[in-house]
Length: 193
View 1 (cartoon, rainbow, N blue to C red):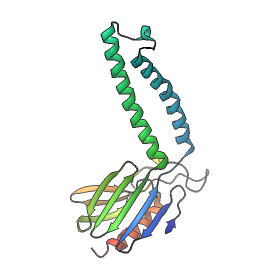
View 2: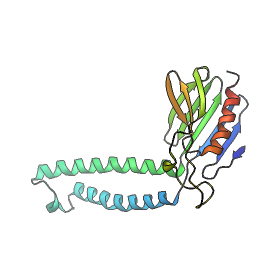
View 3: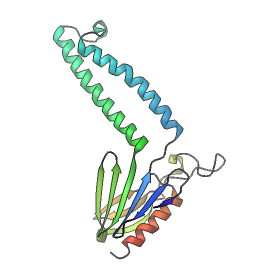
View 4: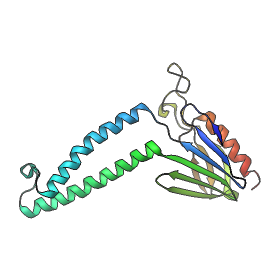
């Protein structure tokens, strides 16, 4: 397995004979870990409060509703809402920590999967046109520096193409050097469409 080393993202390249598999990691920046700590610090007491209200052992006097039935409905709604919010935030954190995009090219198609959440898009190779680097993302949206603190930040450069009248993007976490290398590999594999 070959690895394309990037400043923030590494791309693992695996040639499986009839298809090419690319695994693009996500960036992990120190700010993300601070965000995780803040979210967990807020989610912990919120979840405890929801559980305390549902079990009847919480601070019922502080609730904005009165009456036994209203308190029960409020507690269930609050618990379900807080549980859903917790589930969404935890799944996003798992994606940020362990997530990657897997791109497979071959057998007349290009498939992009975002793991571990399982989001999948499939494109027919013969319908793909105008395969290019997307340099339209402003530098202000770039995350981190490319060569160090003194250099200007390099913008994120996904690969963009047209498919069946719609614009599609893959590799949204790559910077230009690794995106150019991945684009060359994809063009080479799709060249015999």
